[in-house]
Image 1 (cartoon, rainbow, N blue to C red):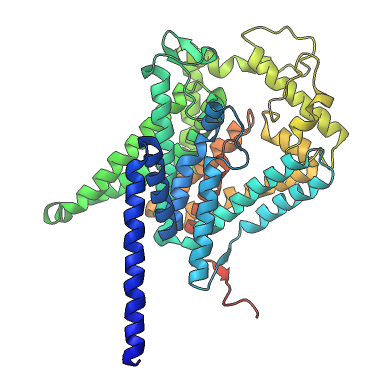
Image 2: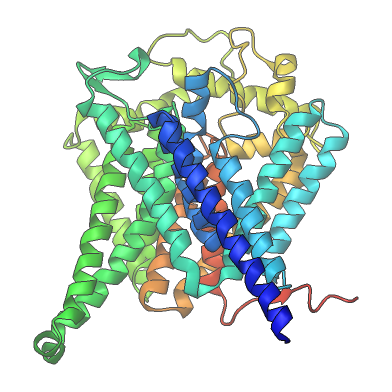
Length: 502
């Protein structure tokens, strides 16, 4: 490079520096003139953008924390911020940062993972149902939601085990934030919605979901992950303490697992407390099922765990029979069993005690009518509410958005083929989770144990509800990505720009 060319380059850099400094001064003066709230919003938004551009998975973690705020923001603004709510905006930013990172390296990686095929099968059939859906908008938005699950799973899988901590941190921080909010709503705030009141100054916890049941379902997907990691770290701490040489020669080897045990135990305690405070019957049953599944799978010899679960169930049933369980909890868990024996709610007397149960049964019955008239095609993905008036029972004209039973809901919307595709998808997820449990050790096995509890809670709770609301699907996508990473023996095969044909 000649002297003239070098001088021109130095001059360019000099002027670039001058422009950047001037821009910084102007931006600083502008910020100084802004009121506090816009200033905080601008600085916070800028920080989020920078963090996401530097590490897209950090953006995903922030997305998981902000995503459940959608229902609260809808309530505050009085408008439905669909499809661009807080979680969706951050997700778009994260996807953009991920794509920019790939373009910068001239390699956008698309992992080929086993779960992609069951997901594509289910989402593909759901997309086909747009051909006969009455509400194309509702169906398309639901297909996009499931496409986001796939994309998030692939993003986490592409990041690999080295950056897996970002996804796990996002999951746990989101859960702890919601749990702390729910505990405050339950017994510390002292006021709340009248319909959620349990006693004087005590209310059902509902977080930023504005409803206790989906809120409790969200917590039910997270606490097993924290519990699985707690079990793994406790086992690690126990082995470190039993090694007397390590205990005296290197105390730091004890300190780290001890801190991890304390942190995960705090997470589990807060999450479980908030779930209990939600007073959600479906979440309680889901949590009991998750505990049973995790306890059965905890020993390497699974038959020992199953025997332990059977013994614990016998003790619990005996305690309920002789009246040792608190009356409020016993009635909450068992009073619906007599009511669900009603197969036709038409003509049933409606009281305050049975209203919520009969309302669900009425929506189950409406879904059954949809299945009777459309057994093979369904009414269209996410079109349950759109066609509800045609199948509604006389005393139940208001649609609740879904059938309050995911299996009936999927069959009503996608027909028997859709239900089979859905069951095949979750069968594959459970199979991969159990496969990981049998083949892994340490924190990876603890994480797989927690995921088994998560899927169990989801499957049981959704007998009484649908948890694919308020951006919970983003959490599910991240957890599927985590499962994909810990299930693989080696990094997944990828299709990248470099390998693609010219």
